[in-house]
Length: 381
Length: 156
View 1 (cartoon, rainbow over the protein chains, first blue to last red):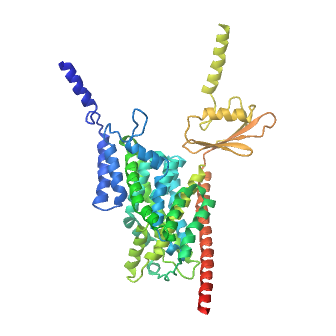
View 2 (view 1 turned 90 degrees about the horizontal axis):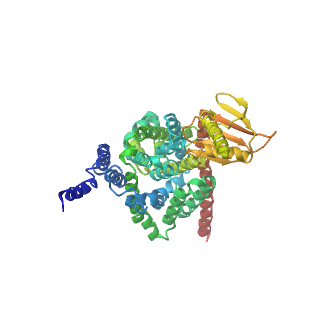
View 3 (view 1 turned 30 degrees about the horizontal axis):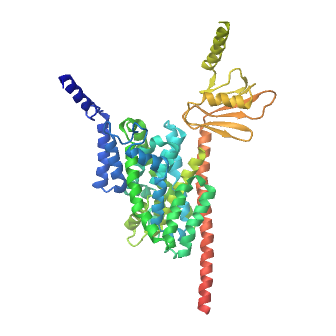
């Protein structure tokens, strides 16, 4: 072997290393990934999602890693396969909703169905933010996908974004889950700003008991109404109601346990890693993702305000008043937003337990944000 | 030789007509069209081409744009821009009147955006109100059934 041949071999090895193909902008993405891993582990902010997302961001931002590209034969690489079959085909958000439905008890909402109006009112931020996003230079489809962040519903955000503006999937999902984790920080000042002391102390009547038959009929009725009025969102809400029906029927315990347990965990891993892996430095480091993060918080604030104000407007017509602190739970960060209402209520009256009352608008917000997403899909169909 | 020269001339005029094609707010305008109305926000014109020929022209002219939607309506073909173009829509009439097809290009306007947002926000309320009514009715029916069943049991 000659020296030139040895040098050629060494050069060949060097050219295939990440060190030789290094770009400085990927360091920023390592830090972004590390930040989300830190928030997940140290601060316990939505760890089930932020940990795999943070790791996805970190690992995909190394040169030449065969994760999100295609092989020479044209097959997708590992995470590309998760992305294609899970996110591009919009399967994962629907399966997550199946699991969520299997975990959800709609009793508080069935007992007090007028809370659905709060769930609708809490979508105010979605439509207001749309306007702001268009003004900032986003296309209409991008604006729709960004504004749904305020609905505080991760799978809906991912479903709508993949449908309308897949190039924004990473920043939108990250913004949605980050702000969902920060609900206890973002909401209380807004709740205090739009309520007075008297309103915060309103006590609500204990909810009536809900029969098993009502809980079984509810997913069928909701699914039917949504299928007739907003069919575009049935893949999401239909799976949600299926999960709920499995839970409430009481006869398919194994299926319900699998849906809310192992199946949910599996798809959560794939979701997190695939979403994180879409955030390569070349795509992420531009003004749009940063703007999305900034706009996301305004979206959340206006949605919180919308829920609280809707409760106050309803009080003008109701004999039995609603404590407007539960209006903020119309932002569908289940059950975090309901817990925030509980904590805020107890600050002003230690014996005023609002949690079960707040769960109703919390669940209504989930249906409301899915309905809003369906409206946006219909806008472009 | 003459054939090639003639072909080159034809091609030259075809391509220059595209290259120097008129446009309104970035939306292509069919060459040699007759203007009916032209303002800053709206341009309506007539073309001797049929609806299908006009549609083919726009499909070719807009083929590289991602956010363009073609909607086939009863009396028109409606081309909508969902992206960042200055124009909002191009409407091609299917009614071939007086040997011409009318085309209308409309500027992007906030009235449409705000209007559709307000309608859709209200529509979310409508969906949830209908669900509220359905839940209230089904709740009442089921609780009545149970009351009757319990009354029967108590009587027995």
